[in-house]
Length: 311
Ligand code: FAQ
Image 1 (tube, helix red, strand yellow):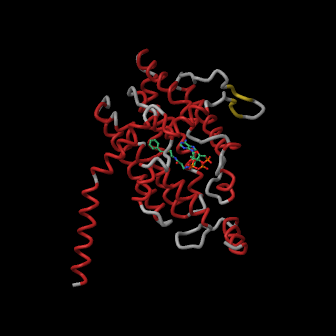
Image 2 (tube, rainbow, N blue to C red):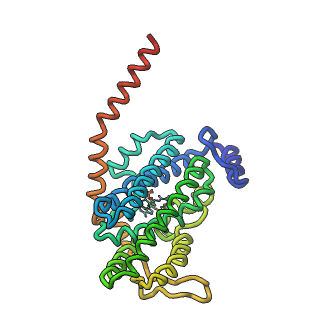
Image 3 (cartoon, rainbow, N blue to C red):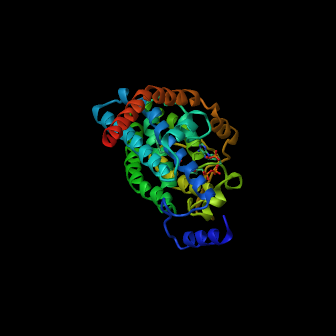
């Protein structure tokens, strides 16, 4: 890639032009997007599992209908995202194979178990809340298909976040046992939610380049701080406490200070050692294997039609 090409590409990025699938782009830009969009797609699909675990046990028909719709939305998000990645010349098959081989990641958050109904509330409130904080800026990502996919995804995530907060509100205002369940879920999901934003900026391998390419608009630490600032008052409104003795409003910064994240836990989970990693990948592998006959049949059908047309 010669300097003139790279300078022309940078000028387009600096001018806030959207990059489209057939536009020339540096190989690193393409690779970064395939990695990020592919991992984002995998996260949506794997993210259906922890909540799917509670569909048959939702406490009322209304809760069940809402949860069913939410999990279905996540499947849809995964499909838009795989399609967005495919515009960069990678196939869904390749991406799935990389996931199953442990080469492509998915969000660390989905490797924690959903132990009680309150976890469904905490996931909607915190996990979708964190996802929105991260994804709203992605609506302005320099790559057109990813940015456009994010607009609809963010609208749906905002419904998800509200349904979660409403579950938390109902439990927090319920019996002492229900409030205790809500508190326990917050205790378990708080730190993993902060980890969703990725390593500190100083440790973020891709961060600087992705900011320059305007794939990312804010750094990992900036988004994490915005999330803490938005979420702590919501937790206080619920009458719940956060499992962080160092969490404190900092008047000078106009932000909350918070305690140190356990990065050993983060990397352990990212590298496959979380409580549910093995189960999540097994579920994906089983779905892939069980669907093999559908892929074969679709292919055979397409070939037959093609042969018929040519005859
Ligand atoms: N988990 O250099 P950076 C959802 C990896 S929301 C696992 O900072 P980057 C909705 C990272 O990939 C969740 N791995 O990386 C939903 C890289 O490894 P690599 C999905 C992580 O890309 C809600 C290495 O660490 N959202 O699904 C994590 O600049 C409820 C170094 O990190 C997205 O994917 C992590 N938490 O920044 C569904 C959003 N963090 O790839 C169901 C799009 C970092 O070199 C229920 N992605 N790593 O092998 C992004 O914004 C970025 O990719 C970041 C990471 C911010 C996640």
